[in-house]
Amino acid sequence: MRTIQGVSVSAGIAIGTVRVLAAVDYAVERRLIDDPQAEMDRFRAARDTAVAQLKQLRDNVAAEFGENKAELFDAHRLMLQDPDYAECVEGLIAQDKVNAEFAVKSAAEQFAAMFAAMDSSTMQARAADVKDVSRRVMNVLQGKRDSTAQDGSVQGDAVQNGIVQNGIAQNGESHIIFAEDLAPSDTAQLDRAKVLGLVTAKGSANSHTAILARTMGLPAITGIGDAFDPADDGHVAVIDGTSGAVFVDPDEATLTEYRRRKAEAEEHLSLLRKLKGKPTETKSGQRVHLYANISRPSDAAAVLANDAEGIGLFRSEFLYLEREDWPIEEFQFDAYGQVAQEMGDRPVIIRALDIGADKQVDYFNLSHEDNPALGYRAIRICLTRPEIFKVQLRALLRASAYGNIAIMLPMITSVQEVRDAKRILEEAKSELRGERIDFNESIQIGVMIETPASVIMADELAAEVDFFSIGTNDLTQYTLACDRQNPSLERFADPHSPAVLRMIQMTIEAAHRHGIWCGICGELGADLSLTDTFLRLGIDELSVSPTSVLPLRNVIRNH
Image 1: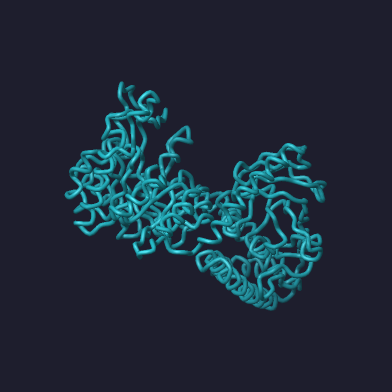
Image 2: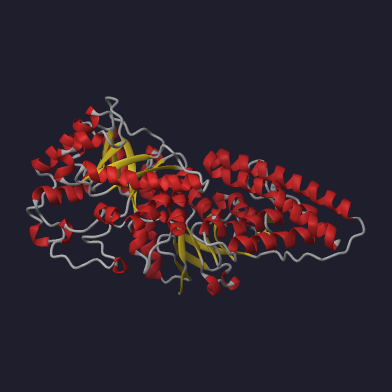
């Protein structure tokens, strides 16, 4: 058995035979031409054909995966139609008197290098896109037929971008695909009935290829680098899309374990098939919005796979906890924007920085506290160190142009804290307007209700915000005066306590008096023994771990 560690880009388990896709050599001969105008006409005709092909591919993807996933290929068409791109190609033809194929390849390399040099990983990922669309134009110029059939399946022995199929479309057997790299159009054109999973030497977790793999439900791993070996073709492999592990020629113990895990996942998938697309609604017609909690951008795939209606809690502090230095605005914008794009129209509620207490970060240089749970944490850090808070708010606002983002303020105890946070938010908005950067002017603001003070002040707080989300973990801790990090207090820290449940009831009633919605994003939301209670209290939304979504929907629909 050979074990390879890559980067997880799409969760799931695949077990099967490896098929290595060999990249076709895209060498283009440089030829001097006598008639630059004729060569420019060749380029324009090829570009128009490529645009038409992308339109077909876009329609295929939209029909199978939805309009928001098809937007990628709208972006590809716009890239080809960009005046700067055309000007670069035609300029090379006119000045150097070279053939159109060579000019397209040279232009692609120039634009790809420009994108790759940018600080934003989102823009860096565009380097692969510009190469993808340029290769499509080169295919047309070289007389290679497009592989996009009307049904979107792969036809013949090649997919777009010159990845040889090696018989995948002909022999009827499903395979795990190993490749140096896959462009978005390659991935979109793969026949899902014949592909079990993807492993590539190159690529990134936020590339369009990775997003498509997640959308298609294909376990996928990237970044295995030099471990990519064409000699693996025909060997048995196991890939774990959650951990990023690849096992070539697995031993019996590994096979047995992963077969067990795969069977469990398929049982969960069976539940998904029954409930996917069904409303989270009781038999009497009471509607509840069922969202999911995440900690990292890559978790969005699980939200979609489990058919949650949105993200009710994105714990943004993990962007800080997993680094050794401050996450700059561009880094945060990439993370929030990636999730917003992936979720499409579904809500994405992002909790503002919640550092402190049990979540310590060295570079924050926080002083030692005897009781950190009651100390300098969450909104208190945000308001006293606005230079940190504003960086996050700017990133959140910028990302709001790409999806349905809302901001949630943690650890609120007073109306003044909300007003101070809104003032800093307005400063960030004003700065972005001055820089002519787009954002959602009416972005929603909510607060986490997780202190007795916020429950008592709920009527006044409701007048300031758009929604409440009850953080039951901390609300239990503070209501019962039990440190949730202290295992010896477990018998006293009862989240089912009537005191805690009454706090929840008071919060819901205050929200509804003021016409805003109220949800729960703490662990109690997934406690099926309390679902009946929450429905009776009139809860509007429950946000739970992705794997808890379907069991909870099942209980609600049977209520």
